Length: 207
Image (cartoon, rainbow, N blue to C red; front, side, top):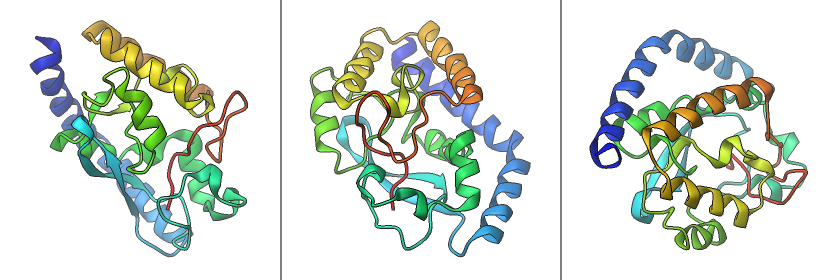
């Protein structure tokens, strides 16, 4: 019952409340991004949703507009050169992900679930197929994000996503939610360039 209805209802309520309550923060960040570098406030990128259907994820822009598009950050030569000053702050605090509240509200994403892969991350998508992790809505955060995030290799990340799908429940989602808050406050697993100290993995935002 939770998986097939209540989870989606809670996602709509939480995302709507989040957008309303954080509207002041959205405005402040939007102004800061515009003052920091030329380009749009928001960044759109093709990602893979439930059933491997494509959608456009929203983020606050953290990179220069001349950054190569749809390329994993770890494949960029010196990726740090493309990140704006405001972008460093947004990525470190994970505030660049806030616009995804809209993706959650319209049904592209869930609050908790596997992080949506880039449309061309074929290796990650293939691994997730083994665990049916492409058959649920991707999330703003998930089980893998509190167990390594950028530091995880693809096979391990997909395995954790599969474990989440198999054990999906309200209690597990609550655990992921509060685990994410703790991880963000400690900046756990955030590795710029998308390649961790443990294993290689694809990056976060890529232009």
